[in-house]
Structure formats: C-alpha cells, structure tokens
Length: 211
Image 1 (cartoon, rainbow, N blue to C red):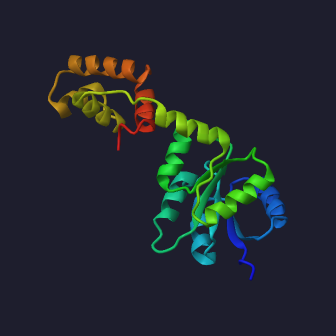
Image 2: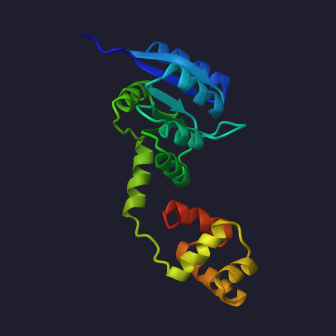
C-alpha cells in the first residue's frame, strides 16, 4: 500500500515565488500542497485549518511576524503539529541559529535543486533533519569554535546591554560606577571581536551566551 502524500503548506510573502514553488511541487511525487500563505499570521490560521504535515517557511515575511516567530508558534502547537522546513535565501549564523532554536526541523536554501527539496520535505514529514550543505558547514564550524569566556560580571553587563540599557542605567542596576561599566564593555568587545553594543549582543546570542 502506498503512503499518503505529504501535505504541505507554503509560506512566502512573494506571490511569484509561491507560484513557482506550487508549480514545482505539483510535479513532485507524493507531495500535496494544501494551502499557501503570504504572512506568518495567515500561515498559522491555515495550518490550524488544513493540518499540513510540513510547512515550507521563508524567514522574511514583510509585515507582521517573521518566519522565525511563526515557526516558534507552530512548534508550540499542542499535539502533533506540522514540521517546519525553512526555505530561504538567508544563511547567516544568526538566521540559522534563530530558526533551529525556534523549532525548525530543517533549513534549506532556495538555491537547492528540486530533487533535494523533495527529499527534504519527505525527511521533514518523518521528523528527520535536513540542512543545506553551506548551512551544515556553518553549524559544524560554530559547534567546533571555542566560545569566548566571559566573567560573571561581564555576563551581567551583557544581559543588561541586551535589554537596551545605557551605561548609566547598567551602572545603577549593578551598583557599580560608569567607568567600571566602560572598562567591562571594552573587555567584552575584545573577547567577542566586535566594536559596537549591537554587535556584542548579536554575537552573544549566536554563541548562546545569553538566554
């Protein structure tokens, strides 16, 4: 007996991209596109209505919630919710990390060949992880890269920094002087290889130094 086709929901804010994917998946064996969405909110509503096995998710969705937040909400659905397979052009460390932490089963780049997309959809439906080769290389490199060692005080300051506090507010929150805050910030920048507050927070999140 043949297995039923994998039920897929497309989520991409570009109509032309969705049309191309729909035409491509129509030719795929054992794949049935049950709905298509242009926003994260629409994807959540359609997923609740059509119960797809896999959601093909772009990361940047224009207005409304992005692909990462949509993925997080789909992954939080009680019971057996859909698997999310990210299909995007973005492959930065931050994008990959955010998507995987949100609950994405796989991460594919739009430059992949059709047969690789078909295989990834079936793998996602079975709960198996598929990563594009460049993405897999990035993940392995990050795992092998030694994490910067920050002191407890530096981590405290970094956490305050992530909340958007300025030096004066950080000093008040931690009961230290502003000069001390500046000294710690210089050391944090050196250890993380950055020169801005935004860069420090971004790298800290990539390295999982912050919650």
